[in-house]
Length: 341
Image (cartoon, rainbow, N blue to C red; front, side, top):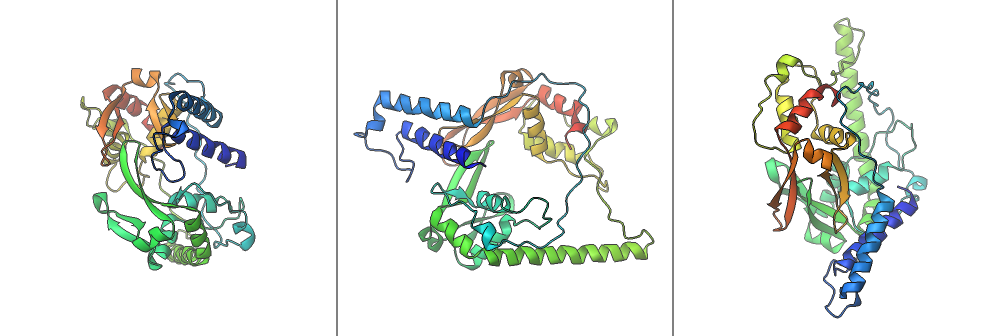
């Protein structure tokens, strides 16, 4: 993200929180005597926040739903060809932020420093989380569906790591954020994280070599087998469990994946592919809430196409609008299912 965009994004978040009577630096409520709590000032701050948001995310013209989209060729999957090397020169370009960032966001920003076309294996979230766990900064806590969450220990909280909660796309998430001091600590330990990434790379190379040797023994010249792009036949689509109840986009993806034969050499469909398709058709649009969180919401065309919202209460006790897809919207997905993978 360009420097100007980051400054505008932070300014929009600060203005938005001040308009709501919240101190953007410590998330505490402003005293009633604070000037930002005066109605006229609050409205002005909200107006400026809306203006900055429009500068950051300009609205694209809505597009009509296309019935016969031309299937674009899928770009070849890129495989890593070199070990990860985060040199001091690369790391010097990392821009520390006073605004806390999520741990996964921190990893993405580091990977953005890698030279394009370098072929290096990227750093992943688990590389950093593992090192921080070894340092006693994070603790693994059981989450939903048996998946562990990496959350700050008391020691980690003292170092600037903080527990955060948010309702994202209708799902309650608990995750770790890092302030400037925490980001600095990770950078001090980053070469340990790099070593883990390179261990993973060496393991992948050994597995590839073993597969190639097995392939040569079978007489196939050691060719790498690849999975086909997600697709379904008309006969498979006929088994889609249609009902009248609106469902989340993740349930649509799960139902579609269940239609694949158990031994099919076909990639599974991710719910984000379905979500992105709805956005591309102008049926969903990206919005930002009062605290700067991005979410997707139906456009007028989306409501007309069978996308609905349902107010629910998150685990933090706050109301949120869950976006659900009715029979008409699900039918639309089935008509274009082979364009999603």
